[in-house]
Image (tube, rainbow, N blue to C red):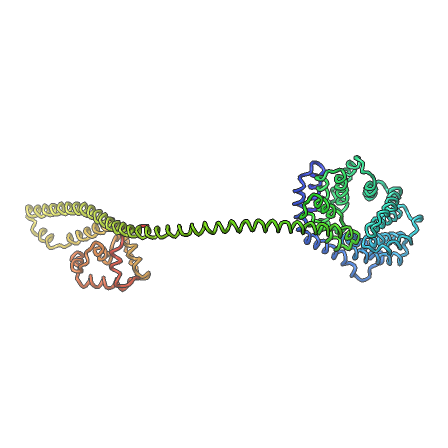
Length: 541
């Protein structure tokens, strides 16, 4: 179905306004590339048709019908196989005593013998049949078999005189044939070939083309072939090639090996000087002829193929000579280029040394800039911390002055009110001190995390995963983190840290030792790495 639709589209285009031949050449090349798949599909179809022959108990009538279908598949694909099935049908027809089938099968056998070069056997069969006693349909087949015999024998024996009886038998075919059948119309084309190809033939061919176009079968290829033949003799090479290509495409898509389109395409391209395409199509033609065992086609192609092959080889030799001349010129150019490359290499080598020296100078300058950037970063960091510390310290001092003044006023009031017992209780109480200490640590934590917002995350990254510190909800820093926060601020003395946190020296020492043991980095480098937390990466690129 897909094949039919494709051929329909191609034929419609051809009938209206044919596209450039190159488009059909591309389609033909793609179809030739798909040839093996198409032939494999035909082989599968033939195998399916052959399957019933293995069934026991087939009647002669049934076997005859199966052989007929196999003959139809094989007659333009593999003549040897077609002959085998027709020979069997002759035996079956004789066994059934069916004279019509006997004669019909023997006429088919004569045509196959003629195509395969077995002229003696073909002529013997034809002479053994009395054409006068045949029915109208068998007479048509009888005259057709004789005309094909003389056509093939003219090629095999190289006797052009055989065309005279061939044309006479074609005339006899036309006298007894049914003018409404397609085979009759195709037979008229054979006779027209022997005449001077009148202009009216083009219209007839195109009408016939439109009639068989929906089928997409071998008849379409035949009509396209004769359209190409007509335009060839009218000197219209463009349309001639187009129709020959359409015929060849149809032949390939129907696995028709007994064809003439490739032969005439090869001749056309050879005459126009395109030996590459001529050689390709000649190879396709002779390959099909040998595959199908079509002897007269092989003979037709043998001389042409030799001429085309010689011309193709001569063209290849000329191409090689040109290539050798071009190669000599290229070699001279390469020598000059090599000299230029050597000179360029020397200059590049000098430039490379200069670039290396510049690169080293730039590297030294880069290191100086990097060190300077590090120093500037540290200064900026110190200045930023200093400014924030001063501001927060001023706020803190002011707050504590206010709190001390308020505390003094509350004590003064108790004295004035002579509430000495309450005054004594308040002086003995440490709650205020504890509250202020908590407030102080909270303020310290806030100031520190404002300066180093990623301190906790970076500090935990220095610890083993299972040893990382988890803060309680609401806490900014805990005692462990405060110890290392003070260390990050530059307070490395454990005594000062203990005083700041209002704990013992041994407590600070134990915390620091425990943290080093929990580190994911080397113990000796742990506190040094803590000192790097929050520093800006100022590496120059």
